[in-house]
Length: 406
Image 1 (cartoon, rainbow, N blue to C red):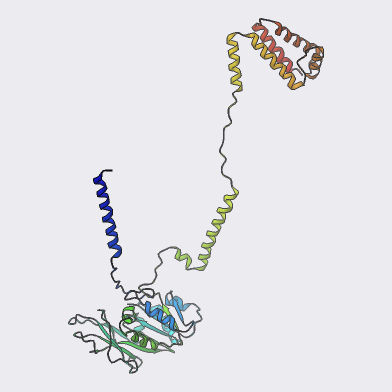
Image 2 (image 1 turned 60 degrees about the vertical axis):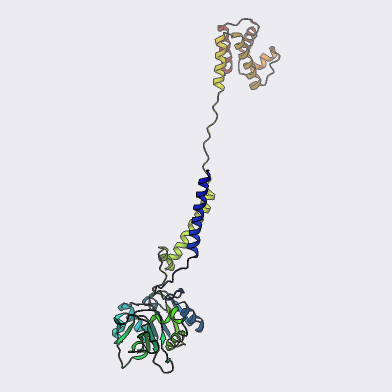
């Protein structure tokens, strides 16, 4: 590695390290997305409100709902008198869901909706209309809000120094509707008073229950509540909720709700499918464990070593035949036959006499004469100095005949 290459490598590594350090130490931009999620600590999250309500309410009077209201209210939840709490930028209740909520409220429950717009069915039922303020001559849309109840009214309105859209009730049923709060956008940066107030906070009875609607959900976000003493506005606005009610915090109609992208959510959302999935996993594991122990690995086929005895014998015999050494071949053949007698008949071949011949004839099922002829021929071959091919052939024939005799 050359010196120049080393210098370039060091400079490159230092540059990469510098970029990584600058990126890691860079301050993250503030997230201004309107999530209204209970877990978000961003300006438009509701982490502060959620934890305040959860910590201050009595035991078993705070419950989170992750299902659609129609599905939740259709179940047999065995709830006491409750208030369903909705908070989001916009909430679109369809007709079936709106009717389900209205029927539930008529039974003596309540709903609190904090949103700029809600389903048309509820608005028509309550004889309400919502409109949005468009002030083209006023470029600053920073709201001032206050409560109209003298005991909750503050001399200086609450101020939110963020430009937002403003919704208000352009039509209310004055016979049944009670106005709870008002708002306007600040004029000429004057934050001391509300000029040309618009109604944005109302309450209306319905059946044995009541419906509370607040058109500025931003008043319940982290940014608004943590600015100066603005938390008292949210505190006073929520005082219209009966403290004895069970508070049902809705997580379904929420921009920041958890979205399940995994197909397994379908299984885990249904207890029957969930347990079927668990049983499938457990059964598969058991099958792998026991089936793997029961079966052995395949035994490889090992070919036996080939028997080279016959080939070796043929080779040796060929060598003797090529040399025409009949005497040596006859000697080996006689010795092999004597070994045969010792192995099969248990006879001692060191002394070849009449007793040996008689025993050999008896054990080999040959006649005494045949045994005597063979032994005499073997002795004669041994005594010859020159053995001919004819002698070798005769010897082999007589030995094979003796062995095969019955």
